[in-house]
Amino acid sequence: MAVAGPVLPDRLVPGLRVVFCGTAPGLVSASRGHYYAGPGNRFWSLLYEAGFVPEPLTPGDDDRVAEYGIGLTDLVKTMAQSHDKGLPYDAEGLEAKVTVHRPAWIAFTSKEAGKAAARYLGERPPGLGVQNWTFAGARVVVLPSPSGRNQGRASYDGRASRLEWWAEAARLIG
Image (cartoon, rainbow, N blue to C red; front, top):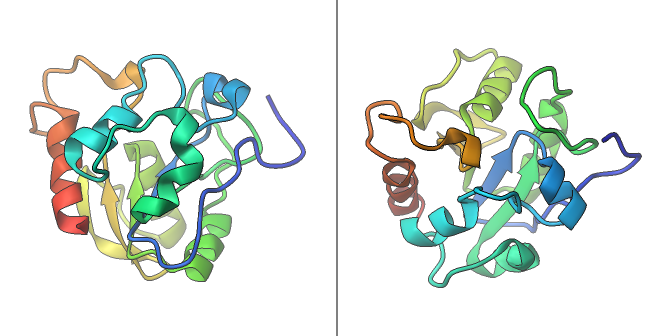
């Protein structure tokens, strides 16, 4: 689904503590007009369970995340997708947004998004967790995807669950 403008508007303001950056909006998120709205996507529950926010939120609350020092964006803004293959990542555009808004952290919500950012910077493909490089001055953490397609694995890079990675990031980011 290609569109002229962004599929979902960025949820960015200056001085955020963390910006969550996905690969591209899913088809359901695009049709509903809200981030991480697909069935089985655990983004909103992980955000709460990990301790990033003090109350449960839903996709319909995506316009409120700045109240918690959180921003939302994607590496692909002009199309929705059902897979992460062959997408037109705009790491340069993301770099410009991070430069303008100056979040303390950027949290890539999948290894694929983290890899695209690392490639752009000439860094090695990242594993999960805190990275030893920055993105436009923001510290970087790569989290396991909250997508329903990324559940039920025996291990998430040595951790038993996605929540373990998300909770560690929440403790570090504050």
